[in-house]
Length: 300
Length: 256
Ligand code: HEM
Image 1 (cartoon, chains in turn red, yellow):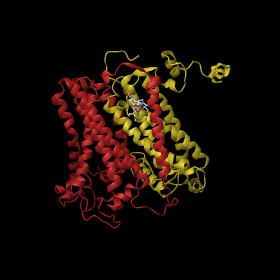
Image 2 (spheres, protein in one colour):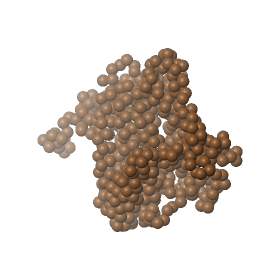
Image 3 (spheres, rainbow over the protein chains, first blue to last red):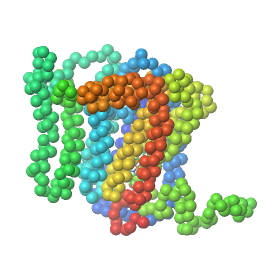
């Protein structure tokens, strides 16, 4: 418990508390508005479409919000000093060394993936994927008001990405990761000498296919096995298309949009599968999975 | 006395309309003011409802302004060299009047801005405000999100303390592994990438986080990124207007 309080009371982690509180608050607010609109049939926003003068009706809200935010910021800044630690010293590596909180989700990804995926491919996919949203979501409903019923798929996907993959991973990275980036429950004390008892193995080894030959060269069978596994994640894309391409939804979506949606979605699913492959087995006393696919150039 | 003042040529040249509470003056109040001119004269009632927009875009912008002002003040006291940076921070925290307040506001404002952009994006998604005709403004928004994160991250290095260089070391280490362009990334070595010529080297101005990195991040943080962010914000606000103001349900009425 002390550990948790100590982390939380670090001034740089105050935003995490704000993050948690505000995400819960606003999710709840949006949910209740969506429920109300869905039950009414006509959204509240549509009932308030008469025009009002910006001066004073909007300007006064902005004015009050400004005063409030400034007051909060000034009080926060008087109460808590920004940290200033010892001077920079390359010879002294802190353990754990953590990125700022908003990047801890990505740093957490480093546990499950090699840096080229966690640090480069994933951020790129996230940015490109976010930018693609308006062009791949062709549902015309739900524009300009809160609703859940009319766009369940979109909202659930976003909530999964936002609440689980972003906020939750930030929280795990901040609160549950200690020295050596090992997982510690809040009631456990950080032990800098902690070494896991389980060794990582590759997925193929679970099926009796060693990743490397006795002479340490890569085993082609394991490579093929891995490639099949990764391929298997994405094959449903083609199969579902062949089966459903003539349905109304798929016709409207078109092949390109459909492929982008399917690719992004399955990548998100793949992310979760990889996380589970790593975290799951230890629960049963089995070895965690390190790689699914090992090649001479890169590993997944 | 006040009445007399109002009759002077100077007063009239500044304020172009009287203050009587009329429809016309309420409109002029917006149109005749370069700052308020960002707004339309009239908006649908739900757009003034804090429960709809959460005011998050506006708050994000407010925080950006606060960061600009406090940031300029901080620049008076800070030299971006490994020799002075840390000393200047100490001096600022201990001897400059209101130094800690300015630095804290800059630091916490930056954290808060990251948080409010995240919430703003969440709200825009939930109200479906990226749907036609606002698709492109969402794309501009995503760029603003990236710029906000880059601004925060580059600023993190400037105090030049242990927290700063190690957080930035962790962050930039990933650049080594960039496919093709990093020396440890897939196909990087095959393309002739070495620690001293890959993307990370370009980013850091060296093979590790050192004095050249400090200068690069400083220039990026204080000049390049704020300018780029300001340009995109201008586009963002302009598009909010051009796309028909704050989104709302299609009730058959024309937006303007
Ligand atoms: C520096 C960051 C940003 C600033 C200062 C900013 C500012 C604003 C402001 C003041 C508005 C007016 C309505 C409101 O307050 O909600 C707005 C609307 C909008 N923003 Fe942003 N924004 C930022 C980032 C983003 C991001 C990250 C996204 C999405 C990825 C985004 C997408 C939009 C869209 C689509 C609208 C129109 C919403 C509507 O009409 O209801 N913005 N922005």
